[in-house]
Length: 454
Image (cartoon, rainbow, N blue to C red; front, side):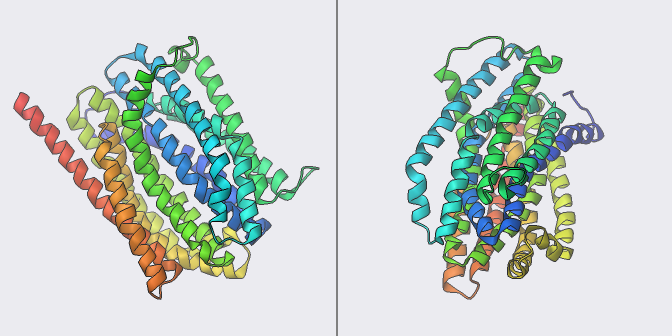
């Protein structure tokens, strides 16, 4: 990354970093997308089972991997402060931490998964598919968590095109193994939705191996000598990562878990409703990759400028990113409104599921604007390493406002399952307002401090 002096230069550099991140996020999300759609075309029961499994796994993964995202602002600020020698030590400590977190997830899941599934009102076939899908997926948890650290390191250097290429290479691998294991082609076992779990686990191992090879052998990364020395485990370094990472992880967890909670609460509805809800939510999540990618790019550029103590430049970047996200959200909203039936047909050929999915997609329209505000603002705040207030705001917005309101509408009014979606929209809107207020307050506070010191 380079210092920029004009808005035009900043837009150019932000786009240079952003576009590969967007492709990367879309590629990574596509694995879940293809798991869902290919399972849906196998049968509605498999779609529902994979939906439940994904709803349990997604908040766990995103919350804990959010902790590992701390590597991005840590490395980007070290780059901005010209402290390159400290970087490999931080990355390796992040790898140690990622393996530890993965092992904790595996042990916890072994003891709690059956209890969680049995506490839900699921059809036996759906429950079995959800259980087996998660067991299959668990074989790829360790490499997946390690990859999050390696990817954060690569992205923090501004080399986002590298992670883009890695992620793009994973797609044909994932699709191929999905095809072989879901449908039982070319002598492979026909596993239905469960096969998607094994396919994704295999893909995670391959992707992580590619990342390790690139960091070790390619000149842009090998000069850091990340894997050339065995560093002892250092709890002090873990503490530094966790101080930044835990609030990030909690903020992400509170946001993603409310979607999972809604899916789990909707298990009281029939299989068609569960499958339709999950299909619509899957596409809404697909569109969310745009503001999320802008958020990740802002963390890098804002962190770089803050590390160099160029606070005015950091502010300009944050508002360029926000404007970009809102503009794209309006375009996506128009597309969603016009093509919602065609979009629903991507997920299923079952008439009932298709019609209900198209109806749910109407509500996804309103996700777009709130996501376009709250995600980039969160990314900018992470660049400042301002993370503690953010997770509190997320907790209040999603769990104090969004979920209770949605539960009330779904169970005590005529809105039914759609009431949960209205609750989600309300929580996202409150989150967008709160986070924007925090960013404005923080930037004004920094300017006042600068003015008083000059």
